[in-house]
Image 1 (cartoon, rainbow, N blue to C red):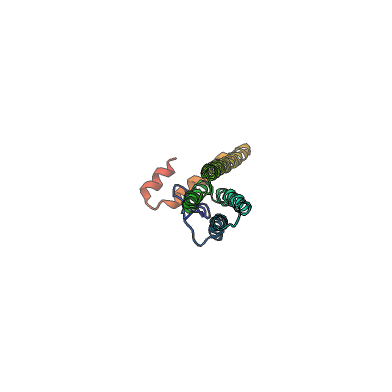
Image 2: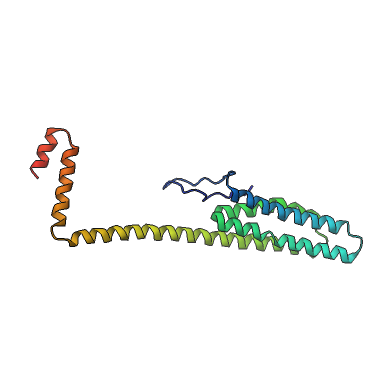
Length: 193
């Protein structure tokens, strides 16, 4: 139950973005990658458990480790697509689905530590990547806001550079305010300006 879709639409300022969007195709693509990982690990485990000789069991053990390393793909995709929430929640979803297979089906003593270590590395890298993506998004938003402020400042500087621009603009502002006020009391106060 990863929650990609966190940044599928732009939220209003100050509003928390909607986390779960089951209507988003990218959400379902992430889910398909997660299921593909779980199925790969499970099939490799079943093949190893039913292997007729040691070489075949080793082959399925390697396939299982490869399928487990593939867990990085949905975490990476989710982190890049949905940011911090998507990356972390996809990682947790993978742990919930793959964890029991790892604990119950570890083929040997060494594999009991190696495979969870692989999954742990995937989780750490996914979390770091998700944090980095989040920082980049926030930096881009700050840069866009700064660009808007600089553009406004430039327009004000251009208007002030024209002779008589300030006086004309202030007169337009006073005229607008006069038209907006309906009561005579406020109009007389404005005329005294």
